[in-house]
Image (cartoon, rainbow, N blue to C red; front, side, top):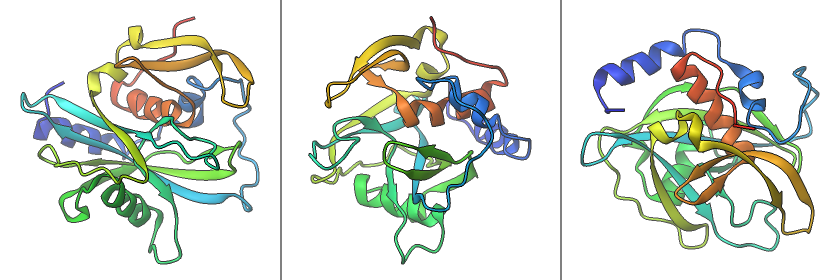
Length: 217
């Protein structure tokens, strides 16, 4: 998918319509959940960014990070979107998302345009309520990974998240020894993109495509 002003205008216009919401998120969840929203008043708050930008061939890219290994981080080593928890100095969830993008990957907030906000998502294992944002930058950033947080930067064509062949299911063994059965995931450059990251990206994919997209059985 080519990175053009028409594409950006089309994406931004889609945010004026109802979002695909939790049904789209849960199509990439490893368990079936109810859609009603529980009380998240005690949940910690976090924000993430889906950042789109062009590569040298003007193809639309999406950046992911592989988190560093931390024994106290439940999401240690996983593939995720840039982002992190809200801090007291953040004026808003959007401000927190952009601050984290700059801290983790060195992308100046002044160069980034936010197109819209996707549906929030509660991560039960860590009790975080995550606010996702969709943003663009008109050139490939000079990524400067934060050494203490980012193990690797994964630059991925947006098209990879729109192809049904990249949506798969498998049994996934967690570091705590628990095995999750038939987990939906994106197969991206040999990496397993699952959980909250896959759920958030799937809502954006369905917003863009205007159709339901599920992992293959």
